[in-house]
Length: 177
Image (cartoon, rainbow, N blue to C red; front, side, top):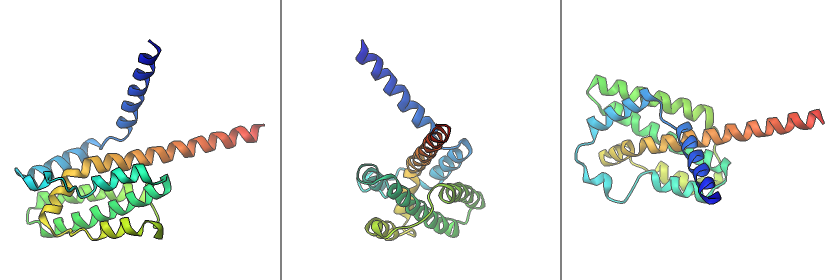
């Protein structure tokens, strides 16, 4: 019975963490509309060669939080380049507006939570910078993966905020002692 209780507690805390990392409703809608516009029955998206998701998996397993933040910043920069290219290539004004909306959200997330760069992650950075943002398949794959990447970025932001609050509480406790 105790194991069941702890299992439910872990599951519930996992849901709470995931909900903190949700994509805002208006951004979610813009991404869905862009996906509907750009992604038709496209088998190239599901060819086992993701653009960002493999890096995200390595990010969580192999890197500490500061390096994760740096790598997420690089991913956000790469998304910015991809969407800038898509916006420049688009002839549809509504699509351009949706891309701008997505870009605004990515810019705010990047500026507020993932500043800085480091030479230690050069290989990851070079891999992401080598992504061909003018390749329509890459653009569609990036769009397909965006919600998951956005959630991961938000999770990192939330972990950073929790760590800061924990340090502040510890400092306050030490000052009272």
